Length: 141
Picture 1: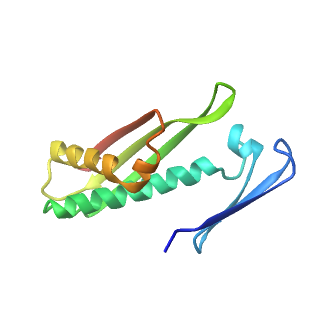
Picture 2 (picture 1 turned 30 degrees about the horizontal axis):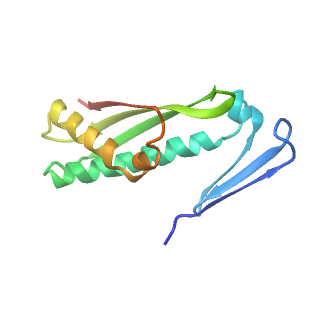
């Protein structure tokens, strides 16, 4: 079954407002200011960041468990950068920062598994056109 979301925009871009829903419990509003000027509210890039962080955390947890090191937790923050490129708003960078609590695993192995998750998670694959995707993977002590 496909995942679904919806959005509606009312008015012109500088003064209008939008709203979105995703799944059963995610909804919000967005405006020009919330998207391009750090104003209050949400924006589509935050949804992309949350989707990427969620997918990556789940993919990494699956890889770790499959390698015999099930995690206690994997927490990921994602920051999506939107810039004007050639006159058009463009996602230019996604920075993933993940911290894992994985008993019995060393930092090098965790970093290797994190790279595999970055390459293999479905949202990472969907965002392959983003020119820069960075990863900072650390084991919690």
